[in-house]
Image: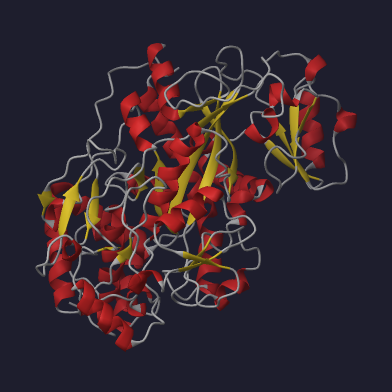
Length: 590
């Protein structure tokens, strides 16, 4: 069991970046206003800082105050017009600045917004549409020059070849390796054979039918009376799921998975619950993973009873809101800080568990461990699809919804991964959690003005906003390598032991290295309520789980190792290289 050892400290403010050229009339490289990224209210305070002081981050703690949760949903409070967010680095185009839905910010200038086109899909959530409109995007259905979209995962990876260099999708090719329950289990079973249940024992025993029918029959005979749960491999929202305990109920000829049912879950007020954990992957190679510190706790609407008479009661055994909201017992919780109703926030759950002497920090650490190992499990196949079909590192990112359940000993178990998690906002609690979530997702994804604008149009914007670059530079996102860059990568992959690369790999940075690092540093400035779980200064312990070592993972590991001492030195080094336009050269080694 996880018992609380010490109180969680209050969280520190985060940093948001603004363009000084829109705050004062003088030309400048920019300033930063520091404020709490979750408290855009009338009480938000700001102070000017240099860019060099901005990327030292303290991980957001697990427990937030009730007051911060209330302010989280209130949106941004911005006094000055700030149409773009500047990069930390010279000669890198600024990024679109996304705002919360209740942000009191001025309308974006038409000279910028006319280039911001978002292609609507049939599944674009309302909260996404509201965020886009607040941030100056025009919503289109037919245009070819759109720069973003939000839709289902693309099953045919070859379609990514049609994506233009300035367009960004909210999915990676090959993400079915995480979202399909049968493929997810194949990933874990492979890793479990190599590393054992001690490292990969957080998924209940699973059988893929009809392939594993013989193995299931043997397990069934060994565990007579055990309950099992049957799931379609690709459906969501609880569709097609049922709990069984009789052999005749097993589908013999359909593609399904049969999973051992956790009969002793942790209960609160007698009800089952699970956690919807939001996970953002901005890159697969290098692997960059962030976990959102807030989330939703979803309760079954009928109290749990462990017997065979009520196996058909979906309101008892399933926690999906899409199912339980139709129960006559379902109660909506409209307060993010309330232990009321059948949906809570993480903050409320952590406070509840802490009062019962549960070590919330340790529990959250176990959940983050599950997230990293799960993404590593699908990394090899996803990377292969990306290398084959995606020409620009700008093109993709993906938000996942991890469903995690706790057993009576507070051990977290992974139930499934959703590649298009629900962003419906049926209550004020949903808005409180999901509105800042989607804002942070878009800001971390790093949208820029499209590169298809003419040179003349860009010059007009450069003059208006006093910025050296305004449109996306395709070279920064290129995947092509020069001979010297290929040679360096081969050299370090030949002997990828940490002692061999931890200092040497960043001693002489190639042009491609610099591009990777400036994208990474710009990205983490927008971390907000997300917590970086890979890479970190300690994440090298996960390298052994990769099917093949990746050069970029080694590079970022070494960069994080050096950043522990002083991140500002590394940022200044990158700035100096960018001032020389080193990152825009076609082939070089410094």
